[in-house]
Image 1 (tube, one colour):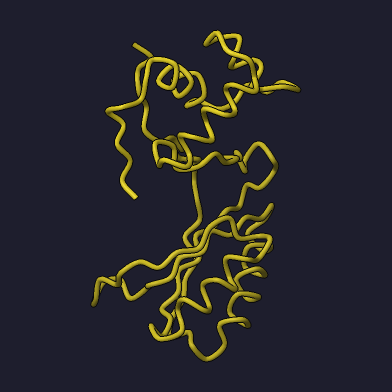
Image 2: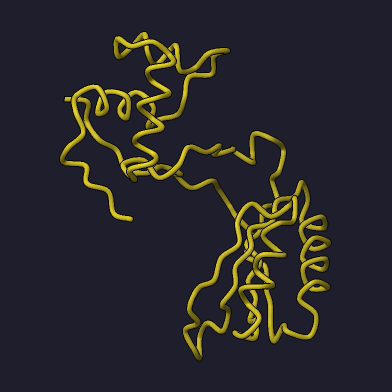
Length: 165
């Protein structure tokens, strides 16, 4: 659903501006946001729920910095999977505890045959390779080719930004 953001009021805009960089790392983060925008924590939560339901906000989620958590050998595993099984297999791979995200992308033949990507986190490259073998076992004979592309740095992970006005 595409959200109509033209009808958000100044308080919703202020809540978005106050939370778009992340919730405060406090025991009661919505109270802290409320202190900034002039509402109670309960009112902030209620307004956020309305924005989530209407599609103005898509989600609230954790965006971990895997490097700070000690996972320094992160690798995007890429797979050339038979298309008829990719949805079922992608769900299985995405549910693995060491996979942060798994998604289907179009191939770009002849240069890029891979159509499934799964981000694997590990403390060493050997650990990532071991996890890739676990994925390979799940995928079975549906794998035509695979590879691992290791991260060199963390990329900026942000969504849309708006001004409080």
